[in-house]
Image 1 (cartoon, one colour):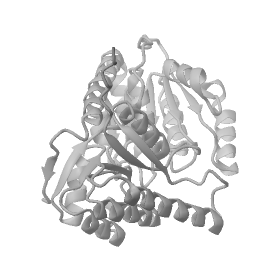
Image 2 (cartoon, helix red, strand yellow; image 1 turned 45 degrees about the vertical axis):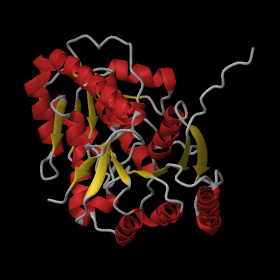
Image 3 (cartoon, one colour; image 1 turned 180 degrees about the horizontal axis):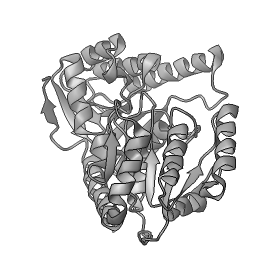
Length: 364
């Protein structure tokens, strides 16, 4: 007896940067592709040459990959949906090329933004991209603040979907770290001044000088030799109060989060959008102290504090720790629940991205 035919999955083209190298942008694109491949027959357009970065040859290879990607879209069945992880700076030229190809084939376009550089400052390339995308593209943002600021910057009415990066951070089964006499601050990042290395050390040192029973854990590779020296000098000055663990992965990374009480992320990085490391910290039930950049205010909410750019981060962080030391247990519970709620909402939006009615955002 003939078997009934299985219903064929609809097609979807996914274009963007895939690892290696592994960074926030490539990781989210890879995870989005994995998620969508469960529902769609996906064609992948990888815009990374996977050779040594930098130099004219590397960028020539990237341009060639973008051209091949454009031809892939043009050769595909018309009106096949196209998901594009939007580039930044001159990389927007690749996004423009792929988007133009999708418009020629009358394909629905879903464009996913990952940074704020073309929101903080007006970009002619982004303005051109918006003209090419037209009115029917679906714009995917990391938070509602990002969507509103984008529409205001380009005075554009857009169709918007919000998908937080929490969708791609695993749920953690580990219990929340119980309260102890010592409060442990932690920073995990590529350690340099842009990611707040000196501000973290300064906050730890000031808290110790204020008489707080506190210690710090640093994790991640130093970016430069100067950053390495900054860590070594801090270790000599603070002794056993500062534990430096170097680069951490998998179990060592999990142990880092299990060992800390407050995640301190004083980022100064101008293009910071929605750091996955903050979502990771909150998944372990860790309140966060950070700086007002990108979507971080929306991400942290009331589960810690986000200080504006005109505030002295070191002083504000120490004041917060003093005022909230007795509330840490409640803040930890709230942080974990906030992450779980955001993750569930983001996963649902990602799963249904091609089916849900996007929200219309108008410039204010």
